[in-house]
Amino acid sequence: MSSQINKLLNKASVEARALLQKANINAIPIDVFNIAKYLGIRIIGVEFPNEDMSGLIKQKSNTEIPVIAYNKNDSEHRIRFTIAHEIGHFILHTNNKIFVDSSRIYFRNQVSSKATDIKEIQANKFASELLVPKKFLLRDLEALTSKGINSLKLIIKILSNKYNVSEESMSIRLGKIIY
Image 1 (cartoon, one colour):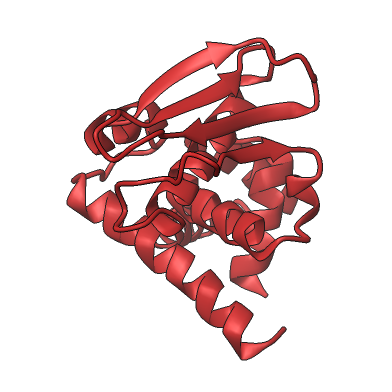
Image 2 (cartoon, one colour; image 1 turned 45 degrees about the vertical axis):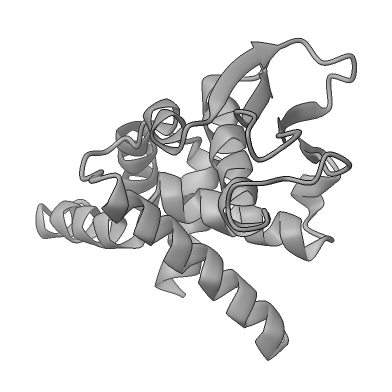
């Protein structure tokens, strides 16, 4: 991975941690709806015409309230990740952090999850750090292992329930932190 990509991914993590600190969030699971409210973002659940589409963020002008739309037919875990992902676009990819060009809409769909576009990779990294903050995860992982819980499958199950994310997401997050 190039140093430029590493810098962009690091920025996503730093910005997610900064947002949690500014919003004074210290409890798990992270409430993405309250974070959006804190940022002045409106959230709506919709039925997209394409079922592969998970969400989008749109703001027509710097005086208009930004809106995140998510696919209300998705699972709770996917909805939470989608909202966190779109908040990532809002924080990382808007001019002066308050304006999205009217010709620009960020979508979350099956293509974006394949991580071929650096902005999508960065928004995914932001969402991951926002929903499962590294400092909390390391603390919780240490607490579980100190209680003698050493089965990775059980650890993933316990932590995914605590953080309200899918077991697959937790497995990926643990893998990236541990290795």
